[in-house]
Length: 183
Image (tube, rainbow, N blue to C red; front, side, top):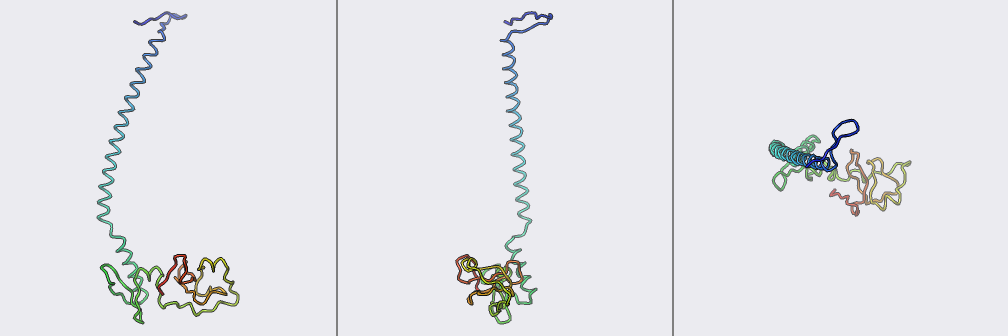
């Protein structure tokens, strides 16, 4: 049973009990609408994910194998340098064959970790105005620099790697920094 009374201006006022009940009903309706909205969003998201997976599978079937693309690029580089290309020991492997008969795996040659001619920079003397090798560089076992940037006091057993690239460096072949060369 609802109780009401007349306000000072003649309007009908409801009791606090009825107002609280209406607030509870409104809150329940609002929660119900939120739950329905969450279900709709979840279904839409699930549908979008399943569509994306299908698109990704179709795309994967159309994209060439990146390992083969890298080998193709490296093989092309070997040929452009004027060297012979030969098949490697395993399927999909290729080697670059140099005029002296030495060989290098095409990806290693392309990346600069295998060079031809081998160690072409080792017999270069530092320029008279070249800076001296620092203790830090000696401890690291390498420093950046092209063939003509050999520093004074560079040990005689150090080799040069990746000439002609921004990563050209002088390094200790047996260093522990992970830089290695089968030059």
